Figure (tube, rainbow, N blue to C red):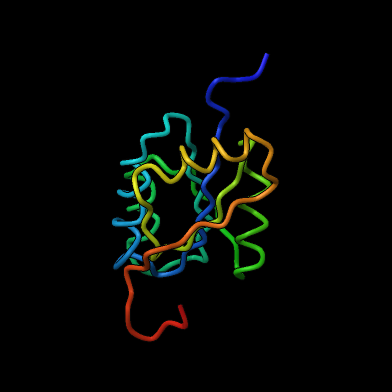
Length: 124
């Protein structure tokens, strides 16, 4: 029997992300989808990134480089589906539910549009 709400792992690499991380995690808390785990791989931040992540119930691990952080998050993920999210991105409240619905219908991957908190100095 198929699970009604398969687990979704949201993976977030961080490094000195305290300026944006709270808003990113708040957007995850506002999701209408009920079965989400958040995994943060921190690059030994010198700010409050780790404390912020923990205050939102995220599982926190450490990794020296971005590629290592992405791998660490994936290796620790228990979800049927994995979303890689940057620490300056926010999600629409229904995006996880909509993506899971598409994946359950047979899509192998889903690309979502994003809204970044940072508007200056990015290529997006």
